Image (tube, rainbow, N blue to C red; front, side, top):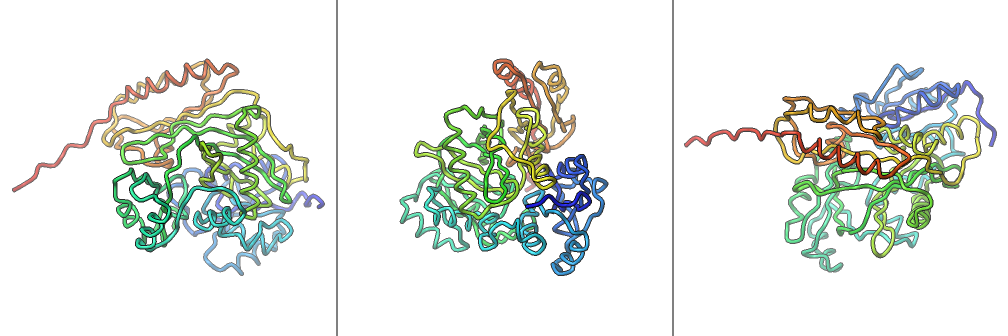
Length: 427
């Protein structure tokens, strides 16, 4: 397949979060970039990461796919790539019309976005997965729980088309799963998707990893593997605490990458970036979910420091000049991202305590969005976390990173969150 002509633009659908990094990377390679937003208005969760000035043109999808295809066809784009989760489905539809030679399997499009269809595709491929059901019928859930002998066990309830752990709720054994099920069913989530069904699944025990990939022609390459640290925060589960890069020589990596690549095949993923979240259980790897776009939160930029490469930069090289892409990666520096967590709701005080973060020996980058007087609620999901801030640590010495992690958590513990006063009850 010949490399596209230099002047042909790359089209990024919803270039938000890490997807916004496509523009400077393509521009540095001499390729103009066009943005397509999947809705006329950018979701509030992404507004801060959208930089319209980076693009030669910004087009908004208003529901008329024919008009958008016609407009893009005049630009002769070299590729259409999703930047954020909200752009995955539209990018698939546009690629099928504009670049059928680099399309992901159309018949499996739902499996790359909808967690219900995703689990069915993985099961159909003969891969082990976490037991789950996706339905709008509570009675069907009851029957399924009884059949799977999961009644009274720890469960997870979540929307099939959410993102950033939005709506992911752990239901401890003995609690009523119907409460989060009923509360979210029929609600439009912050990604503008209607929760017309809900996923109920067993609560899998193990360590969660993420495998970041770039694929071309069905050949999957691994740009990095990271280990998540997650905690329960009151009623919430899946609250991010940390993210650490894993050496490719770690014994867990071969099994994780083999499973992740098989999952990509199962959902018909052939071109582009993806990150596959996998729980490594005592019984082996089990899929949490596939995300058919770059790893968010600025991850590709951090990965450049840790490995000298990233899945996003691999995509830019391949779609620019069909560069040879390495199958795996090398870890040049140890790296961890620490996410700030609000343990309770209220008004924040003593944010000056975090001022010492930048003096740490392994400090690489930090974003602290808290200031005295801010009102916060107990951290529920990744979006809450990113609104508080995070600290990126990197160093050749893993012991130095461990020591600095302890310091960051000690400084975080010095934050004061004053509870909101309770209004008096009037008789």
